Image 1: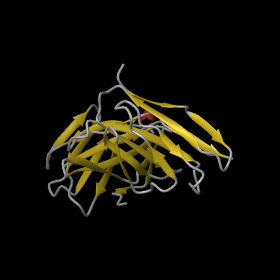
Image 2 (image 1 turned 90 degrees about the horizontal axis):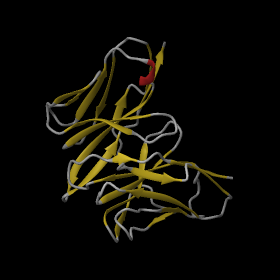
Image 3 (image 1 turned 90 degrees about the vertical axis):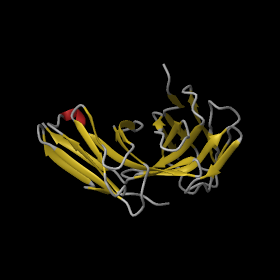
Length: 113
Length: 113
């Protein structure tokens, strides 16, 4: 099955720094989703984007739905230690009235206090 | 509290035994999904169901079976035919309509000895 190209694969940052990660695809999507997964837990939905060009914030997180509908980025401002985890993007395409979700390969974020 | 529960959190089985993982949701969602996650990897779709008594194979269905007799429940059986069953298994649900978000359970870590 297809997976989205997500980058970077991993990153180490200093506490307080801003973080940026993105997802690209050769296919268009109707919805972009960003999840965070803590070790040994299920992914938790952070932000959902529904329209091309949409820019949405959730606290220190900001995500955008690319104009071409083939990409999305997630920014985290002023990182803190609890931001550590794996961040997944997901593209959702309405296929025959049902959704088909494709997940990215994940960005592993480590924050150095 | 509405949500998705998976049990047990950790499961150990001997090679050659079938094992069933539980997934229950009280979100009144029509659609349910099973994913497999290997260390450092993204999510791969095993099976999904958009409605009771109907389910479809995902990208890696071989060696797995499911049932959807009730809207709230979508158990996954890992059979002895699955060559490499040790993994982290995640269940998710959504309203199933185009563009809707998937919400995940806490996961079950299966180890086959």
